[in-house]
Length: 202
Image (cartoon, rainbow, N blue to C red; front, side, top):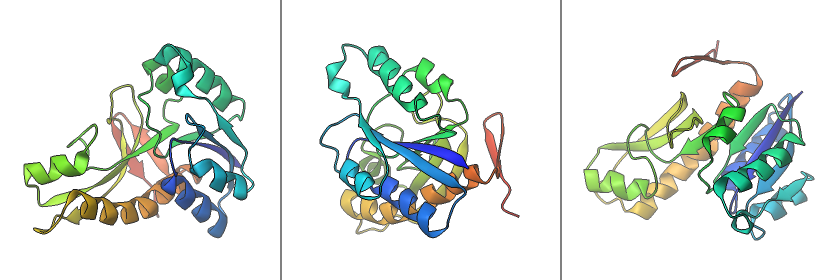
């Protein structure tokens, strides 16, 4: 039985999608904790309602990123996870933290990486005039919004699209792709070779 810890900063809609998929599909895994860097993260209430232990490590209470990361890492490790999932966790993590969880920490980014890293990805896509935009599930490395790509989903950019309409369409895809990628990990279907992830989906 694999153990999953999910990190959130807000409502945690991707966390909720993962929790629901794990329950409905009866994964051989347990979500052992949901941890937030904010006391007011709405997703904490949802996790508690599902019987999942929650914890808060308030990032603004620490003088440096490294000090926060050290306490966060200790909190995560107290749950002995096989996988750490970033689900709208709005913090840049230090290299030492990320390296501690090499090949067992995932993130989802709202663009087709390596295009449009950082924030405001939908605006970046519209400003660039791309015909396709999308989402990427990837393993986390010290370089921001990089790392071996597990899965990507693309949607057509419409002439009428706004940042909000793009975000809405892509969120639907996030809620499908992220649980799927986590399940692949749980089932041992991901093989990492350098910067490439091969998926054994039979």
